[in-house]
Structures are given as C-alpha cells and as structure tokens.
Image (cartoon, rainbow, N blue to C red):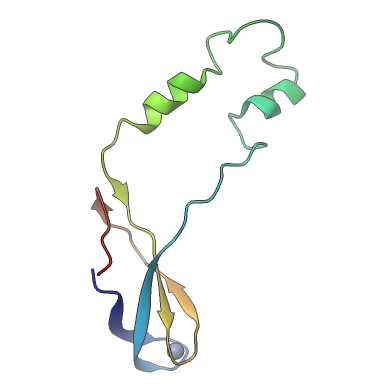
Length: 98
Ligand SMILES: [Zn+2]
C-alpha cells in the first residue's frame, strides 16, 4: 500500500493528498471483562490455582488461532491535517506501507 494517496476529504470537500498510517493497538486494559484483576475484585478466582478458567496460556492459544487480522488505517489530510478512519478493514497477514 502506498504511503500517500489522493482521496476525498470531507472537511476540505475536495480530493486532497492524504497520508496513510496504521493504527496502533495499544495495551489491553486490566479492568476489562475477562481479566484476572476484575475477577478477583468481584470475588471470583480466589484461592489456589487457576480453577480451569483464567489461564493465560488458554487465552494466548485463542489469539493465535487466526493467521490474518483486519487492517485499521487512518487517513490524514495534508491540507487541513484532520484524520479519518478506514470504513471497513480487509483481512491481511501483513500490511506493508511503501
Ligand atoms: Zn482536508
């Protein structure tokens, strides 16, 4: 995929040159649903052992099942410097910006 594209900008209301950038995933939250910290605060997963539910290895295996991920691209207009997210991601194993 090219680093710069000519796309329609809804703020300038015309076609402008726009930068292509992949969104970063960030860190997972510790207080989200399915996290061990949250379960402990709610009175679950107390005592010794995993209790067959909160294993980290189990979650890792779940994440590695799919070989491709949907792309998350941000287009930034070089004129007004406003960004816009990609409408619909496509499945790829690797996104290369050249
Ligand atoms: Zn613009």
